Image 1 (cartoon, one colour):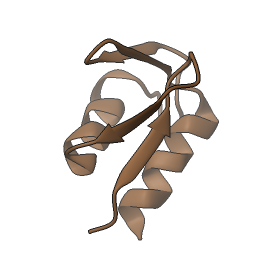
Image 2: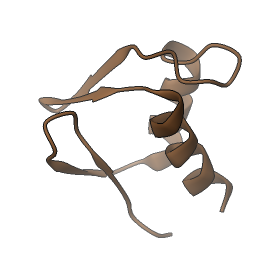
Image 3: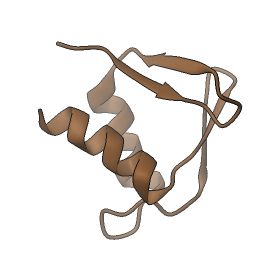
Image 4: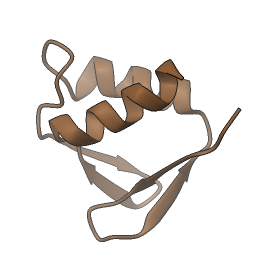
Length: 64
C-alpha cells in the first residue's frame, strides 16, 4: 500500500502509519455528514485542522 503523508498545521509532514484507522477516526470525530468540520486532530504532537479539503485528501487516498 502507498504511504499517506499529510501536512500538519505547522507545515511539517507526517507519515500516517495506519491510513484506514486515521480515516475512520476522522469520520468518527472530525466530520459532519462526510465533510471535515474544522476541528483539530492531534497525533504524536502533530496538529491537523480537519478542513473539508484535508478530509477529502485522506478520503481520496483511502478510496484508491
